[in-house]
Amino acid sequence: MAYPSTIWKTAGSIGPTGMGYFKRGMFTGNANFYYTKWIDRSWPKSIYSEELKPDPDDRAQSWKLPDYNLMDLHASYTLPGASFSNMKLRLHVFNLLDESYVSDADDGDGHAAASARVFLGLGRRWNISLTYDY
Image (cartoon, rainbow, N blue to C red; front, side):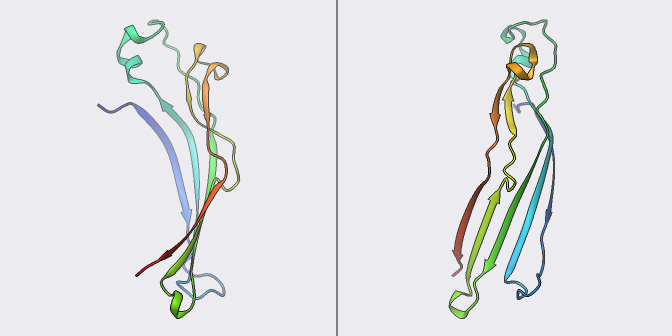
C-alpha cells in the first residue's frame, strides 16, 4: 500500500560543453536549481481510520510549508598529463547559498504553524573526490 504523498518540485540544470581556455573534455560543470512549491505528507491511518484521529469531526487542512529554493554546484576536472589521464577531481556543493528552510513538518494542534513540529533542511555542505579509472 502506497502512502499518500504529494511533492511538487521543478528542477533545471546548466552544463557547459567547453569553456574558454580549457581543453574540450577536461573541464565540466553544472548547476542545479530546485524550487519546491509545497510538500504534503499525511499519515494514512488518520485519513482512513476515524478511531485513530483525536477528533473525528476535525476536517481542517494542515498548514502549508513555506516555499524555498535551493542551488547546488557540481564541477569536475580531468587532471592533465599522461600519468594522470584517467584521474578526475570532483567538487560538489549542496545548498550553495546556505538557504534556511523547513524541509518537513508534523501537523500540530489547531493545524497552525505555531503548533507544528518542523524539521529544518540541511545547510551548506560539500564534498570533494578524486577518481581513477583503470
